[in-house]
Length: 409
Image (tube, rainbow, N blue to C red):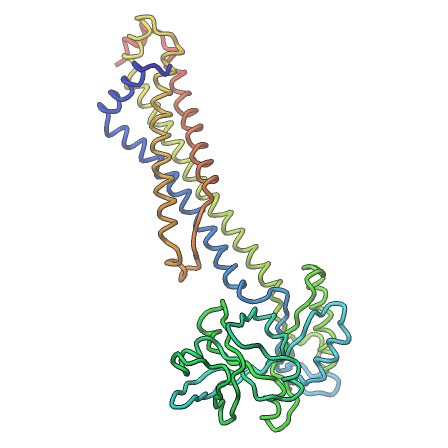
């Protein structure tokens, strides 16, 4: 079946039927190419979701005050909710089994100066544990500590790009900057995987910000890091209990959806991952559909090939060719074309994905890829089904009686 004469005959047949060979090969290559690219795009979509959440901790709640819409216990609607320092202490005390850390955040924008340089930056007044939720990476110096909070120190931790903008290559550590009219000493420079916007933030002690704002104890929002061991179900139960506790404490109607807002990053991440997974499954079905279309195309072409060579096969059988040799000749040609074309399509798809990188990030596809084992497995599957597609008409041809085949028009 795999003799030199058989191979010689296959190449002669391919040479004589270039268009037919190209069309059958193109069908196979296109099927594998589309499969690889679509599967890679599905992985790129998942990468985008992972990148979006990867620069911050995922076991956190962001809690924002809102405005009530329903009267409750003598309080009118349209009431602005405010958080105070005691809220942090009460939550930490009442939910000690769930809370890993808690930090306030008071966010302000304003002009920051150093010598003759100035620019507008966002200043976040926080506690030391804020470093954990943002996954802030210290490049030099240090982050805020509890002593800074206690002493209401005028210390600042600036982003990498703040140092680059204001200090122009000069080391910022130990220098003094003017933040909206107040002088702060730079004690640290950080970087953040969240990108340029994150690295243009400035962190100061929240107690210092409150002192600057006439000694208030108000807090803009707070962030709670829950213990990872409670798991997803525990996090959801904690969120519900926390929401009920805050609403009771702030006299917010239980049915009022606008009094406070809680953003559960873990829940949001899981939902987005599920959505991305569903999209990948859909993309996978489309990709598999292209392979099936390729298999059908091969089958149709092989039926045509057998029909075209009916007389030739009749002569072979009249000269003593066995059904096995007839099947082998046709099957080997089908497998050869499918194999070569399949691997060409696979390689082109892998090369395309490798060249894209972050070029499609605007379309939520980041670094698309496909595992080589998956690509090779899909190609081998196509080759196997291509062989089956060639075997069926070949077997039918082997059953034709020589006299019938010779009379075929």
